[in-house]
Length: 115
Image (cartoon, rainbow, N blue to C red):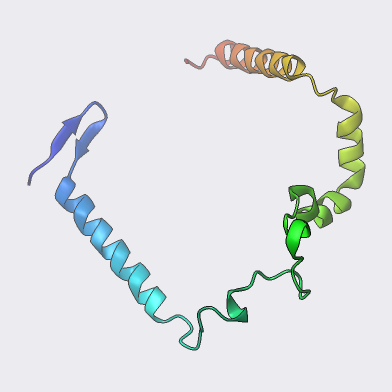
């Protein structure tokens, strides 16, 4: 069988091609079982906006914080605490990231693992 040797093992293009064709065939069969009564260019194409008519004009742009409102509202206590901890300066966030990463790497090295 034809194979390509790489630094991490062998790659069989024929097997990958067969796997791609089988995956495409499965996806096509699932797609064919889809809803047949769908009508293009009707209200079926409209975005679902929680059962309400979507806003028109300038109001049509929906901000991301509106889309996740329920999630943020449910975790309001957590987010309020996090907002008090953060000052918005990227240098502080990068510093914390580097510090925590260094701490984790030191723990890994002391534990006997190898990087």
